Length: 306
Image 1 (tube, rainbow, N blue to C red):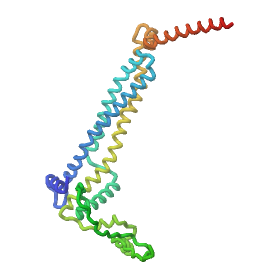
Image 2 (cartoon, helix red, strand yellow; image 1 turned 90 degrees about the vertical axis):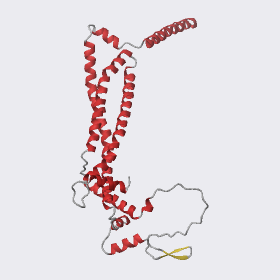
Image 3 (cartoon, rainbow, N blue to C red; image 1 turned 60 degrees about the horizontal axis):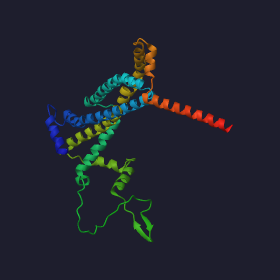
Image 4 (cartoon, rainbow, N blue to C red; image 1 turned 120 degrees about the vertical axis):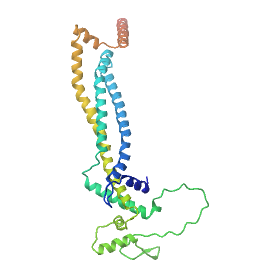
């Protein structure tokens, strides 16, 4: 989007404003163009976190209950409804967080907003005054090597007007910006930098309104972007991980008690839950038989040796 696109947006937003007043709707339409793009990365962030959560829960249940297949499957079935419930709640919470950034457009961070607005307004005015310095470089094409023109270098002034280099006296030429700062400091305007001089550039009356809108929108983008990149992951952490951990610590125990007491024979149910995998039981029996056989052989060898 360029300056003429911004001008078109301003014209389309004009209603009953007095002359010289930029329609606020023009800024909201431009802001909406980048806030509308935040839904997709936020959803992708939540989806990736949900995938990691599933992997972690599956690994934890396997680590702690892997020996007991029936208990492992039961734990997975008991916690699955809570996980899905809090995934849905977190999805709604993320949408609510994004909705806060859609309307209204607001910030109490006045200091940063004004500094950013002034900085971008100066930058846009410089770009209008020297458009060639901000053009995208064109791809280089092979051509005959030309002799570069002589380059003039301006350096900051030193305490002396001359310096000795290579046995010859070379005059030090101060840059125009340094000279301007020197005279401004002498006039009482101290503490300025070369960047501050750009504010003295005359306004581009043909596009001043457009540049002001661009600076306002760009400054608000920086403020809002800094908010959203922290608020979305923090909201997921609070609504999903912390809330789910607090819920599972209570609901899992309650459901285990309900499941165990719902059967007639409590002891048989507990025995079933802690029953090992048949493959593990078979392997244990094989090893026990092998150990018994080796112990017998060891005793026979000891008798022979005696």
